[in-house]
Amino acid sequence: MSDEAKKKEILEKLRNGVIQYDEDACKEGAQEALDAGIDPNEAIFDGLVSGMEEVGRLFEAQEYFVPEILMCADALYAGLALLKPHCKAMDIGLKGAVVIGTVEGDVHDIGKNLVKMMFDVAGFTVYDLGRDVPLDQFVEEQLRTDSDLVCLSAMMTTSMVGMPKVIEKIKAKNPDVMIMIGGAPTSKELAEKFGADGYAEDASNALKEAIKMVSFLKKLRDEKAAKSK
Amino acid sequence: MNSRERVLKLFKGEPVDRVPCFSGMGNITEEGINKLGYKFAAIHSDAKMMADTAATTYKLFGFESGVVPVDLCVEAEAMGCVINVYPHAEGILYPTIKEKLIHKEDEMDIKLPADIGNRGRVPLLREAIKLLKADIGNEVAIGSYVLGPFTLAGQIMELNDLLKLSFKKADKVAKLLDTMADAIIAVAKEFEKAGADFITVREMGATSDVLSPRVFKNLILPPLQKIIKEIKVHSVLHICGKTNDIVTFMMEACPTAISVEQKNDVAETRKKLGKDALIFGNYDPYNVLVSGDENLVRATVRQCIDNGVSAVWPGCDIWPTVPPQNMRAMMDEIKNYGGKK
Image (cartoon, rainbow over the protein chains, first blue to last red):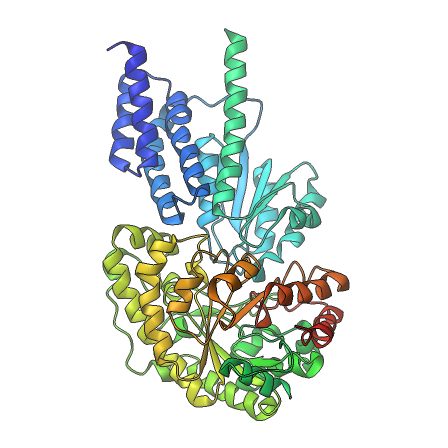
C-alpha cells in the first residue's frame, strides 16, 4: 500500500470511529497515525474533526440526537488524548485562550462541554469553570488569564438572565474580549441585546458554531501552509 | 363564569365562555414578591410565604390559576438530595441540586425511602397548597406540579451519563425511570390530598431537541403512563422544546391535557390531534412576555388562539422580572379575544 493510500485509510478510520462512536477504533487509528508518521494536526482535523462535522450533519438531519453526540464526543476524545501530546501548537496568530462555564443557577453543562471539546481540538487553552459558576468568577478568570474569548452557557431561561451582568462587567474591564453565549433559551436577538458577540442556541448549534470556528482555523492553517510551500 | 369554573370546565371538556389564560407551572412575579416584601430565596422553605406569593399573580393581574411549588427540586430533595436556594444571591436564582445521589452506573439500582410523602419539603408543599386553596381557591383553579421521570433522573445522576446509558443500556435506565415514577406518584398523591385541582407533569428533559422520538416512545412513555394513570385529579403533561414529532405519544400517556412551548407548531399539532384534544401553550414566556412590548404581548395571545390552543399558557415558568404592564396586557387581550373563536 502506498503511503498516501495508507494515510487515507487511517484518516478514514478516525473519521468513522467518531461517527460510529467507536472509542477503540479512534484509539487504534490515532496510534496508527502516529506510527505512520502522519502529522498529528492532520489526523485531528482531517480525521476526528471531519467525523464530528458529519455528526453535526446527522444531528441536523435528526438521525442523531444528544446521546449519540455524547458518545461520538467520547470517541473523539479517545483519539485526541493520544494525538494531542504530539501536536505542535498551530501558529495562526491567535493567542487562543478561552474561559468557559455555565452560569450560576444552572447545573446543565452538556452544550458547554461540546463547545469545550471543539476548543480542545483547536488547540486552545481552555479554562473550564464548570457549572453553577458565580458571575464574578467569569470576570476574574478572564482578567487572570487574559483570555480572548469568554463563553457563557445557560440551559434554563431562569438562569440566562444573569448573562448581561457578566457581559457588561467583562466588556467594561476589557472591551476586546469576545463573548459567546449559548443554551436553549438564547437567540441572536438576545445575544445582541445582551451585548454578546456570538451565540449558539443549543448543544447541536453550539457544536455547529464551534465546528465552524474550528473549520475556519483549519482554513487559516491550510492557507498558511500553502504560502510557506 | 369565574376563572375557576372556566378552567375546571375546560378540563372536563365542557363548553367555556372564552379561552382561559393560566399555567400549571411557576408564575410568580417580582411585582408580587416585592408587594409582600419577601425575599425570593426565602419563599421556597416557608409554606405561608410560598402560598402568599403564588396568589399574587391572580390578585394583581387576574392570571387564572394559583400554582405551588416555585422551584423544581421537591422530589429530588424528598429522595435525599441537598438543595441550594442561593440565599445570598442579589437577583433571582432558582434552587438547584447540590449533590447527585447516583455517581456512577453501578449505583443506579436505588431504593426509595418508604415515607417519601413525608420527607423533604413535601409536607411544606401540602401546607402551601392548603393555604393557597383557602386564599384564592374559590376564584381560581389550584395547580401543583411534579417532574417527569427522565427529568428527575437527570437531577439525581449526571445527565451526561443518563443520556448515554439511555442509548447503551436502555434496560438499566428503564428500571431507574420506573423507580422515579414511584417517587413521583408518591409526591403527586400528597399534592392531591392537599387539594390540588390539577397536576402538571413536567418532563422537560425528554424533548426532541435531546432524545429521538423512538427513545421517547420506548423509554419515557411507559413511566409517564404509569404516573398519569395514578393521578386522579386533572393532569397536564408538559414537554419543553421541539415536540411536534412526539405529541401523539404525549397523548398516549393519557393526560387530561398536553402542554407545549413556543417551539411547537401548534396549528400542526391541532391538526394532528383533532378538535377535542386539550392543547395548552405555547406562549413564549421570556422573549414575548418579559422582553416584548405591549403590541407583541397582545399579538401573541391572538396568535396562540388562532393556532388552536385550548388555553393560552406560558411554555415555561414565567420569569419573575416580567413587566407588570405586560402581564396586564396579556390578561386584557385574553378577555378581548378569548371569546371570539
